[in-house]
Image (cartoon, rainbow, N blue to C red; front, side, top):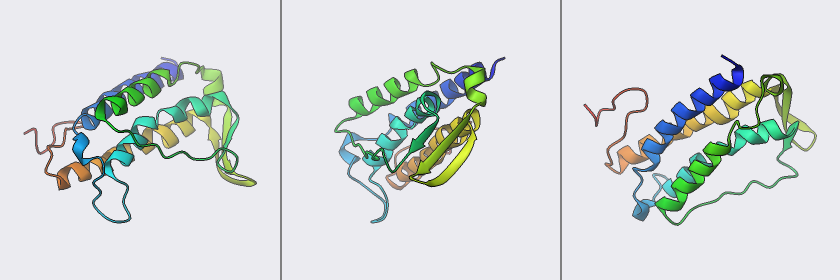
Length: 161
């Protein structure tokens, strides 16, 4: 199996898990947050929905510079739009990949300061897939605090037993 095909299979599996948790968020709770320093649940969900864009950002250029490209922190007004954004970003991810491109170096910087430099396939795993899993974990805690049943990701959750 090619590296691209392996990453696509992993992306599809993680997309299914992400979809399961995003659909659980009640629209009327989008402004809720568990702590003053926390993101709202709507902002966290929007961030999760947009993470797949990092896959193609990693493939389309040799670097990403946070100093020259402002970070946009979107929120969405409703669950339908949130899920549409996720589906669009997820569907576009990895379409331009090849094993040759996946082996090339990618740099994340802020101006002259280099934050990360690694092969694109490693960047995709770390900056997209692992990043996604991390924030889904946060979202599962938000759901638990709101007493909303948490879906299982890699097996049944306590709510599904």
